[in-house]
Length: 218
Image 1: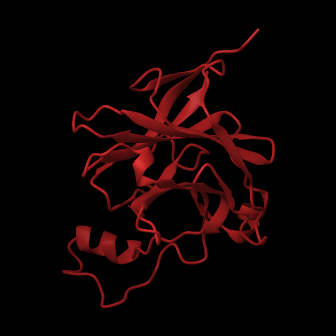
Image 2 (image 1 turned 180 degrees about the vertical axis):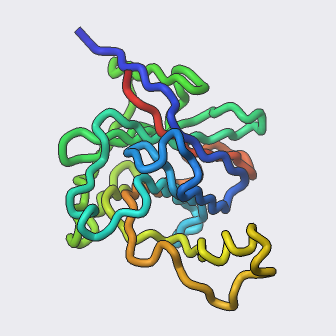
């Protein structure tokens, strides 16, 4: 008997167009510090200009010691949503779900359900690819299949932000950021999921809206 799994939204980043960077550290009290907490979302054209790259980072502010024991939550699915017709509803999704020491990717595929609840039916005929999850301190493990490229594992937090100066500005004790500033996130890590996809797998629209969600298995 096949099992139909329900996933419910717990965190999201909403952004638009073909090149985007979004970050959210320490700002989401409902999920802050949890395995579903999204810190960054990046979507950009690949080195191969025929491809798009989607990056979701979760579990921010990991010290090296914590990174060594950090892992992807087996009950959390990361879902990249792609709207190709401008109606703010996902037309395609790429789903990433960990099982054991591998991250499994499904898509790009038309979702069987849109919105905050995803019903995942393993009986639906879709291509599923996977990559072994890279361990902390290990060289990145990258796998290619069906024209796509996949990675999952810990990475240095790529987002630069001077949080101390930011709070000083909000308090009225500073008028601007410093020329270089101090990176609050230096020395901390995130758990990262990366998928590179040929543009021709995402339809023929010149512009897409894209966002990432984390959903918990119910």
